[in-house]
Image 1 (cartoon, one colour):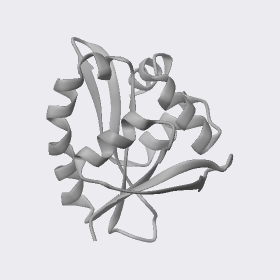
Image 2 (cartoon, helix red, strand yellow):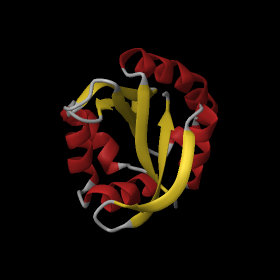
Image 3 (tube, one colour):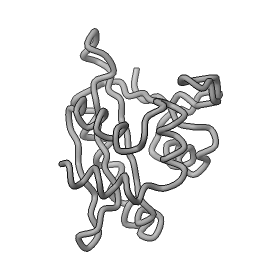
Length: 145
C-alpha cells in the first residue's frame, strides 16, 4: 500500500493535486494516505506495472451506514488509456452500491474532465458552492436515494 501511495503521489495529475490541496490543505501523499486508511474498499489501477490510479469508497460518516464516499486519485496514465479506464468504471460503481445505497462526494469545479466523467457514470452534479478550508467552488455529486 505505501509503495502504491508514493508512486501515485509522485506522478499525480495536476487537477488531482489542486483538488487535494483545496479540499484538505494536505500534500497529495498525506491526503491519499488519509483516504486509504478510511476506505471500506480500495484498489490500485496498474497499466503494465505502472500506477494509473488509486480509487475506492469510504464510509461518509461513522454516524451512517447508508452513505459512501467514492474517490479516485490518478496519474496521467488514466488519460493515455482513457477508453480502457472508462470501460471498467461502471462495474466498480455497481460494487460500491452493493455496500452503500447512497454515494456522495465533492469535485473541484475547475476539474471539468472529472465533472463530465462523474455525470457519465450517472452521478447527479449539484451546483457549485464554496467547499473545503479555502472555500473554493466545488460540485457535490450524488447517486442513490
